[in-house]
Structure formats: structure tokens, C-alpha cells
Image (tube, one colour):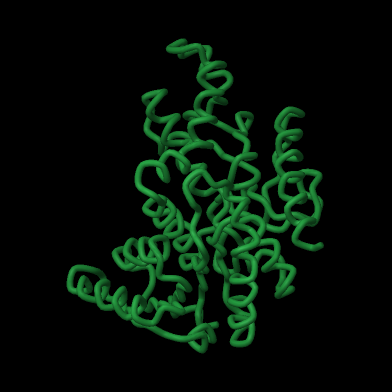
Length: 315
């Protein structure tokens, strides 16, 4: 892979894929963005529409392509799949999207073993696991978008409630990108102070009650958005730009992406989100924090939920 190139292949031109490309083309991060989709007419239309905005962006080439374009890609982002329906859990999507992602992985794997693959299609943790097991690439090269967006929602809600700039808040959502995710309050800090110490000093609210409500709001955000407008795509598009930035700029950024665990946090042979260091080669290390027992139990419960779904698929 040419480390001087910045080529991104996006598979799937639905609302998520195109929101990502629209945001990415304005950053200057990529010098080539290739779009793939089975619906050729939609693909051509999206490429035309996006390309008409190029006079207003940093230099970048955007075009429709095919799987051979993956050969020299730095990053392949998979957003293709069927969408989440109103009132449907993310985990309900698994049977419909597993076959799609396996097929895409086969076609990408036929062209290259050198790129980084980011799975976005839901349920992302399940599909990230299946992609890892299917391709058998080195750990850290196939990752899921995980709870990067959930973590952003968490920081945003903490910022609004505490009236502190979100950039001065470090906090993480761990586990499944879905109903069993947990807030790692033990890892949440405002200006370097653990939030469990900050809140009693602030005294603006009943912080124990507020903590529970904030987690519920984060967990239910996607459902509310789907109820209101049918789908979520802007937030995930921007979170994918953040992951892309960490990879293409080799930033060694800490992001809560979904990855295969091999004993970290007491979990093995499962993909879910924990803080990971992300750079040009994907995940370079997993940050294993000493969680309190309550949070360990929550992370284990999240893994158990995902494992039950995987057992159903295996059978």
C-alpha cells in the first residue's frame, strides 16, 4: 500500500455512505474517493451530485468504481446493507446483513490484503466479528465503527448538562453499539477530574439520577431519530470521518471502535467497543482500563448478548 496515497473506497451509496463521503470530501483527508454500489443508476447519480461540489472543496477525485479499486486503497469502508426499520433493534438486522457483508469481504479480499476495512453496517459488532473470522486478516486490520458515535453523543450530553466544552470532557461508551452498551463512568473526566468527584463538587443536580438518565438518552438516541425522520446518517458520517482521520494521518488516536478481543477485559473471541489506539495500520493497541466490578459486569453482559446472536448464526 502506498503510504503517500490517500485512497478511500466506500461500498454502499445509501444515506450513511453518502453522508460520509459528503463530509470527507470537505476535509482534504483523501485525494481519491471511490464509490461502489449494486444499484448502478443510484451510484452514478450520487457521484454526479457530489462531484458538482468539487469547486468548493480541497482537491479530491470522486468517481464510481469497482472492486479492483480496492487493490491500492488505504481504507475500505463498508456501509452497504439493509436499513433499520422503525421499532426494530439493531440486532434484528443480523440475518439480512450478514450475507451481504460476507460477499463484500470476499470481493475485497480477492483484490487486497493490505488495506484497513471499517465495517459500518449494522449490527456492526456482529458483522465485524463475522468479517474478521471470514477473512482471517491480522487483528486490528478489520474494525467496526463501534461506539464512536455513541461516545460522541455521551460527551455532547455531558457537555450540555455540565455546561463544559465537550472538548474538555473525556468519556466513553463501551460494549455493543446498541441496547446493551454501557457508560464507563470510571473513565469519565472533566478537566482531568473524575466525574464521580466533579459532580459532588458541582452540585448542580442530583447527579446519580442524572447519570442514569444520560445513559438512557444516549442509548435511545438512534430510536428517537428513526422515529422522527426514518434513519440516522449525519452523525455516523462525521464519526467515520474521525476514524478516517486517525488512520490516514497516522494519529494514534484513542477511539472506541469495535475490535476482536483476545483476553482484554476478561473477554475472548468477541467483537465490541473498547478504547483503542488507531493509526495507519488500524488498531495498534487496546487500552485495558481497570474497570470497577459493576462496569465489568455490564461489559460482560454486553458480550453475552452479542454471543447469543452469534451462536444463532453459527447454527
